Image (tube, rainbow, N blue to C red; front, side):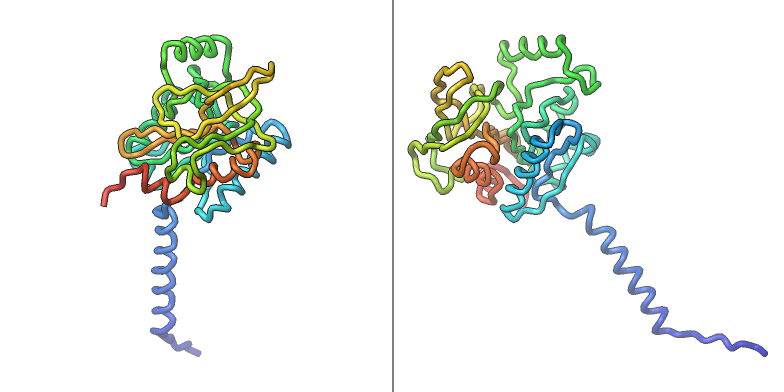
Length: 266
């Protein structure tokens, strides 16, 4: 018995369309622009408490409605000049503070080419040996750099944790949207002790150090323009700065702030 061969044009057409659609889906994802790339280093979340704080920060960013993606140190292998076309914003939490000189250079290039870098991290520790360990020699060299006025890319020097008492809004702008100029008490909060180098400060704070030294006019929120982009530094995280601090934190990710600070080619 000889089997007849049947040709079904509809079936062939279905297969061709399916392959075409799958090819479009495969190409769309890499080209999709992430609104916030959140830098994530699992090894730095050394306790359950820190992991919880990081998750709370991520959830606060997601509450803004922006599309987010966790990114790792693999991002530094990407082309820094093209990275703003992939990540409109990059956020670095206070749990990530050790980077190599090449990685710091990458962050600066990302900003210059139109990225918005938002940091709670002081960006103050340099891993000269690229071994993931911050040794005494590297600490000493970083201290010497800071004394010589070598500021991080965001223009702020920040170190020990202090108690946040009040927020003082000194400039009404997109970063302080929802606030009038004035002083706002914080029920309970913490922030980094900060000093301004070459950034523009929009909100300050009154804080108290661990030895009960009163700190006036500490930098709470600032920005620094660099090339087509900008760096924002916020000295308090959403899990440690009260309702007012959360509002300021969310403002950093607003469309108004991006349009105000970042120049994009038409």
